[in-house]
View (cartoon, rainbow, N blue to C red):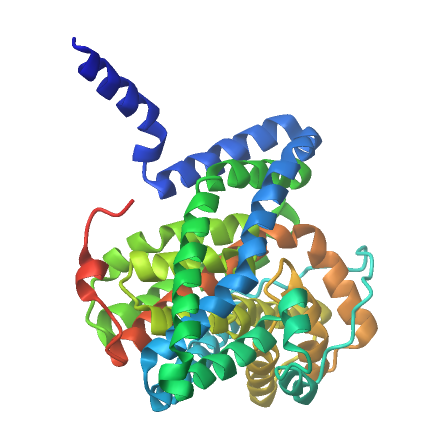
Length: 426
């Protein structure tokens, strides 16, 4: 073998890790993490810091990524009317899919009846923070200090300011070209940083899953099996029927291709339990795997990570029925309507962080006559088991972000079908 051959062999051997598709590396990390956590038990908490580093790396890029890509995307639209068109379609689809998710959850919870015979009196009540009124939430979207909003990671406020800033550049025409070019360059830089961070993903996922499994045990859901089964079936049905239906019937695209393309984002969502932490990966998947162009990806995905909570809405709806059944509350058709409406409203703008939806229960349970003390007891009962449930509902949220973004992109002519259908992707 020549020296050149030796060099090539070493290079191929050194690149073996990188030649494995990222999603396969992450799945292997998930499985290995669950095994190690089960065997190591509480000791697995000693490696959680590796996962924490991974999450911090992702969170580090969320705010600058949202700002520069959204500004760049708005400028790329070239027409302020297009921004309004994208916004209307996005909001309509997000609200529609959330409503469908809640209906699926309510129907299945009524059929399966997971709360019958459940006694929560042994649970420790949790202190619940007051629910922010919808009016206050809407006013808070407009930042009094954009720099503070950027520093505090207030995503809705950052989105609002980015829209205003991008619109200003667009209206400035030639005089705003320099700033537009800077934002374009910054977007490319941020995407390269995401690629670097994603190479750490398998190690971070391994540590997070090992620590979670070690702390809760592989059978962490044993005490809430009926509820877990109801939620799991509901999540799967919603992903397949609603989001698969959007891709196959509304967009006439191959649904298996879509689900294969988004697996990286789903796996990161599962391991981090945070739509916000997953956002950089979701945006990269949208552009590079699904063929969603920057104007749509940079606006629809960040908005979705903040207001699109299919999984959260479904979860809160099912837990509300579960609570009513366990407390012996008979629900009327009007009650079901109120639950669906209230859940849809409170799920908008839910904090995209682990277990946040548990604390929305106060607003929803109140409409069916559950007292604050009983609500605190319900949260205390569910909290020890919430992490694996949260992991699943975050996957639903992120899947919704990507299916809606694909739909809006195709409707707006900002979709590259050749990229969507391209195979293989690594």
